[in-house]
Length: 269
Ligand SMILES: [Mg+2]
Image (cartoon, rainbow, N blue to C red):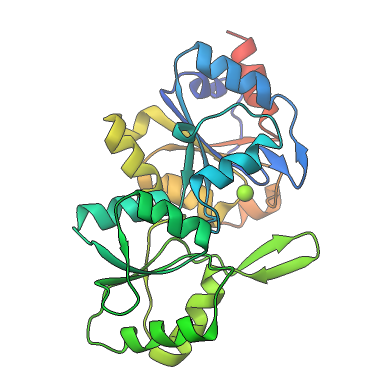
């Protein structure tokens, strides 16, 4: 089932490369071997590449600063955060006045994108990873959701976020508080919604079969890739091992020990 020696060549033929970050490109403060060379190589070969994160607690500008810690030399064009498909959705559906449960950093990005942040008379509630949440704002959000069919979306619904001291509640935890009061569930635009990949492929006018995703989580990265119709590669450098793959409904097309094995495949050409 996992005899893939000859087929790995396929991974060098794609037009678009999507990479999860944590567990795939780095783990904590440690960047995996080969990452700089892969980026250089994809640039030289004029392939598109994007790094993905559900974390919407920071604006794209601030997230790039975080990535600069690793000296990755990538630009905002190479980054897909869960607020990007969310903003795409809001624009496509002509929403202007937004109640954003989000940090000041994220609010800045929404304002730069032309949205009016409005807590009194909004057209839609957008839930993000609001690390500056107050009970007052939670109350306002709960009141809104009790209006019939009030539009409600979320950048992502990860339950918890790992930090150095332990887990903290993520956007899914905040959504759970609102659910207890209102029984409303938001539409999710980030992982594992395939829109996180498809909105970008649509912008580029490239077919999903010409794209590949590398990720370490079966129930987000691999699930999303399969549903979007892109080639899926699970790396074993994060939270997944071979046993988990055998027992999962989300079987990747390829398995690599880590991202460095993609580089080795390119070197064989
Ligand atoms: Mg990951």
